[in-house]
Length: 78
Image: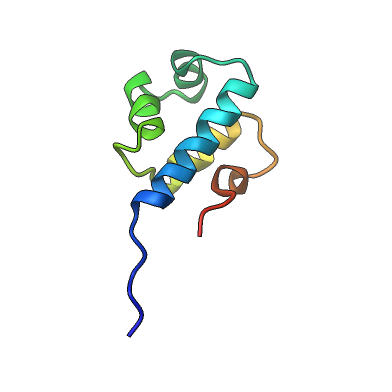
């Protein structure tokens, strides 16, 4: 039986990707939250690995960051 990989490295990679793309666009957490119609604390929690994103949230963030695909937020995950 295979062991299930711990979720922390996955959350950390997503958080790093989110922060990278947000900073590359020159956006604060608050500005990204406004663009995406999310609360600023949601962005903060995601970037600090305190919350796992829902699929819908990943798509919303990717659109708000004007990424080619939501997959860009998942690079290195897996």
